[in-house]
Length: 206
Length: 280
Image (cartoon, rainbow over all chains, first blue to last red; front, side):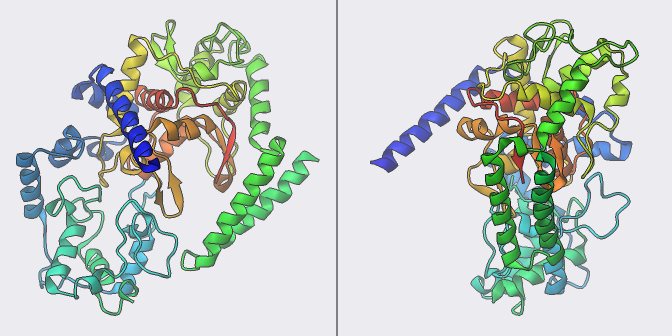
């Protein structure tokens, strides 16, 4: 009964929210872009590209991250085509370096220039990864035992690499950053994080 | 007396936070200890609301409001926050709102900035060049005045005057900005604030498009932020979120900043103003 009631209240709240959204005047894209340009008016020229969503983000924004089937497929294919692999085909690096990258949230904020160290992946901000690190976020799924749960297979190594490089190849409009295609991390750094997830010795798989 | 007691609290807390930072996140127990320390600190503050250091900034803000200042050497007592020139009590709870004289919707900080420019003759470009304090620095003048003004609405439910053409447009623009993803991390406000019970690391994230949660937290700003030992205003909160999102510096008083605040306050409508509160 209580569950039923809670659900009812929750759906009522959602309906009210939706009704309110419908009453609001619609704001066209040009109007939003103009407010963004003025809101960051003092941004240096080399920062301006950050203000404009690229084609994929444009499609995700337009559909509130829930694209129709044809756009979903378009995003997925574009993401697939964007992935670059290491020349030697080796997709796993050093899990210890991966762990340090998973801890670090450094990089690309306006206080991070000139860069004092390499960019981090900041995986722990959103994911649980190891038992020893209890300060982890929950915006993304737990990755505890990631490699072990996938039998340390080569396919899973490749999938992890691709997920880090461009998550839209697996899940169009994923909330996760595109670490490779947006040049947040280098190919070597991505390999280190793949090792953190997939190496048998990694604390992720303890 | 007040000051010395606060110092003891602050030093105790600062050292536990510093300890946590020094030991690094690998030390599991330290995070829990820090959390417990924070909760103890907040509890002590609740028991003695006068020990909130933000009230010192509210006092400073009151002086800045009433003293003749700026090139024209006048006070802000002719500044109309929406309830008539010089009326501060209850004004914050009705902001943001549309101001005829300025021809736009303004939140408290944008309105104070406007009054400092148009009544006192200050240079707005100068005031907004570095509008927010760095860690350990006290909140800037506009923020101190905003803390005073907000505190003068404490306990009053938000009833922002956003239900006219201009207000509705500001809220709609804010909502559009709230979900707009861009930048190298593809983040929008919704990345972190569109669901309940989620965290970044151990920090809990409010679901801000949910009125119930918005009512809990939006009225807490401006707030004393323990980790940076100063008052953080709502404009500063927006600026800091965009910093985290890897976006450039958000202009204080820009239409985008006011629209986002309008959207948040519209979600928090009916929730009490609790400013200044205390944050991690």
